Length: 441
Image (cartoon, rainbow, N blue to C red; front, side, top):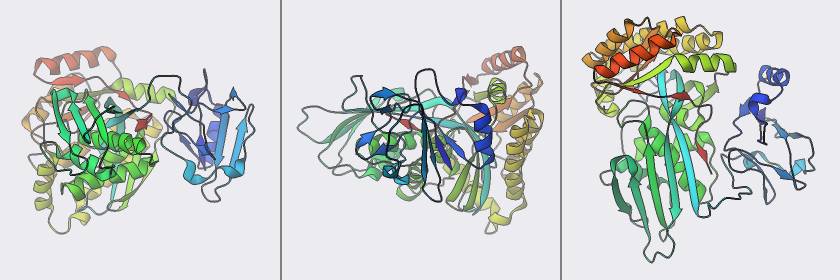
């Protein structure tokens, strides 16, 4: 069962009847984010900026749509709605849909996608692990993509502007070659745009490159979502994640796990189970607002000052693991830690979550001595002076990247810790947890 929570002024998921919410969660339902979701019935769209703005009978209404995923039966509950339920289909569920917009956005598409931190069980989402379990958290800062049609252009082209790097270049949509920014070129190539199209694409993020937070995956996710939306294709979050993953592995032949793309596409706190690479299921870890805010207030993301290349680190670890990597006891421990991290968050046991973060980092050291470099060790040692609960070297680790630190809830100590790390040449990055994955409008 899926519940779509539309938007109306002063109403949203947080004001949704709590008793009913608990009942539906217990019944195995899933609440889909109202921002950037929508559905259609016939030729009518019921969505808009900031979420689903439904114009039924010329009035803005509040509507719950229940879709049984087994029978595709649809039940609609609204304050005032007259809609033919039989005209709604499961394939009408979309990531985003243009609705009534009274803003000047014609010919322009925006997409944002979160990055990922605290990936407990990372390394088990790889082809050599074969099966895996991963816990991770999607956070701001987002990757932001904005594209627009070039009006009056006589020559087909896609002008790409990388705002962070003050770098621009042009892609020929009829003959795409992979240049200095192959990830972007390959993502464009994956959509199959018309050869005569003329676009301007701007990409921006406050997340530093090579921060081991899945930023490259978020770039691919946001860009694919924006381009496919512009081309008139509707893709589910899972489809976007799968396509973004194939860009790195099939088009660019890089070593790449599956968790980053899924975290960016789905958002929230997730438990990912990979049955057989690259096929996986995503289960949202739903907690109360109070727990959500408390966890958010305790987390710090710290960039240690130098970037990394996860694909190169992957190669080193693969060589160390050998042919029987899937049964390696170190990977078994990582799979178990992901499950324990999920349970710790559901219970609100942050002390235990911190311990699991430390244990996961210990296994990273066991996998390869280069995964937790001297600068990471320095960050961990400094943070200990402020009584933190735990530290997780993000992503692959190595000689650069970032670390997630879980504090004990003392806000003053957290700020002093971040100041101390900054004085050592590191960069604390402001974050907040992202309830939603990729959004496009």
